[in-house]
Image (tube, rainbow, N blue to C red; front, side, top):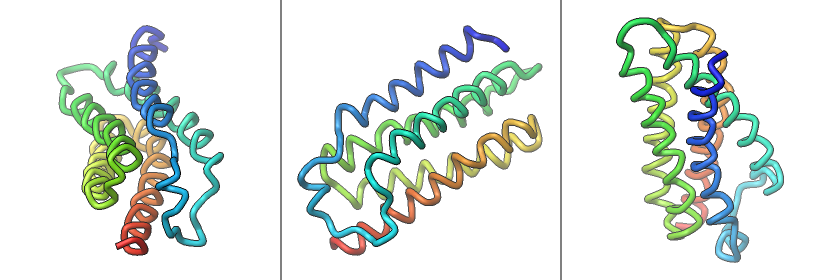
Length: 150
């Protein structure tokens, strides 16, 4: 395991995670209509902590592949960018519709990661599947909250 690469990818994930501390669920969010299947707030930091470790590990793996595989790292960078910006848009700007657009970008980028990583490093694709499932759930939740509060 390349601890330096892992640490760099993990620190990047920590930047994304820090938006949750900078823009926590606020009174605006508490007043929103939410579906009955909305998870409790305490679950989100637990789920994201586990996922960020996996995402960092996958980033380390794909960056170490032999040959020029810049597009694999670019996909990783794209998803972490969408991931990072969603929280300030949703909780900071209180803009559900714009956040939904970024969520679609996140969903597509993670789907592309699963598909392309499958052919380059199958283990990375398998490891990123829980993230894809979580982002799919988060997209459905964002969409339903958008519908309920339109």
